[in-house]
Image 1: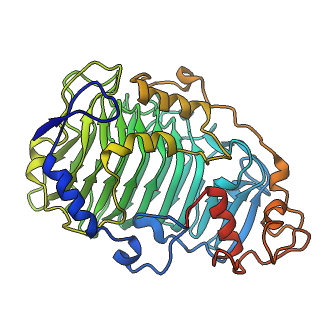
Image 2: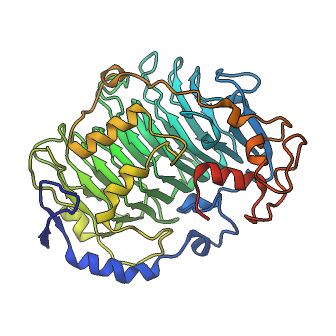
Image 3: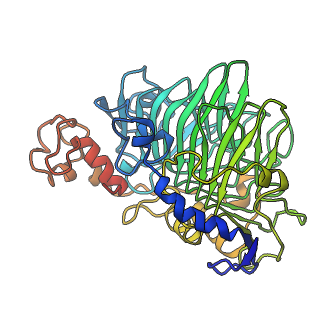
Length: 479
């Protein structure tokens, strides 16, 4: 091991394995897209990465326009998201906060396209009930992008208030989300007598879960739990956690179990200001292979003085094992924090490392020296030139830059839920009701804003359908 200074101005030197950096360059040639690795015929959108990139079952479906912020009823997001198994795309002609009386239970073959909302987009919170905002249970082929899910405390004590819960889900892509104010996990992948697999969480902010709130176990501010389980015959794996910012959680950033059906990738994430622990990897569910590459673990004002390693491995089952591919990870302190020494891997994690390139990745990792600035300028519900981060996410970004902020118990400690701007509603006007706004149709040959067109016809320029071309343009996707 050698000691180097972190390039982004952190005040504490950090420990990095120099040999890892060399091997990372060599093993980059082994990185293949999920298309080749899984023989997926197409991806959800241009630039989709990770095991969930093949979530395409919504294509060819109904274009449903959300026209109200009501909890339910005609034109509501619930009406679109919870429709029976028919494929559909939920687009928005409104922006603001939706006060939910129960979780949105998103059905299979659904694309919730938050990038289409005007102004500040869509924020979800719970005002009644005992559960979180988004539940994807026994469902497949779901894409959710550019949305804010911040449930807040439940009316009564409850162990199930997550921002996003996936249970027995397959082919799911979650991207550019802003997740917070959960009282259990902010993000949970669960499996119960079934399989959970082929899932991506990317480019998102997971922050400010509520610690001493309404969880029956007491303080319980958690980041992400991958492959929690109940029942028998469970399989869980092929999960990608890519380029996310985690900030202000007690622990579980992330906690991982898994089985032999496929690896779990934790690539190019930033983990900031846990109270007690960063990542904990377990063998409790089965043999689990984990790629932990190009991540940055940073202490903060709440982190305990005896700071644990960024990765702790716990092997408690005699017949199961953890295989860890760990390269180019950094642990340290940002400017303004009390200096301390933080190791990347604990003793067991060091002993469970495998040869780099032991399996194929679904993305090419960035060097760790590029990760922090990239995430602080890209992650969360924002779209360059169209939508800025809201005040809550801006505060989180500044906390990471300056080693400020804290784990909270109540939403009022950070000013509550931000107000979401309505924006220019003329930009989403759709005179012919075909799901495509007039202003965009006017830019495409072959479309007429006064006459309903087939949004699934192929656009001659992009080679994709008109609606996919529009969704990609609104998201700023690169083709």
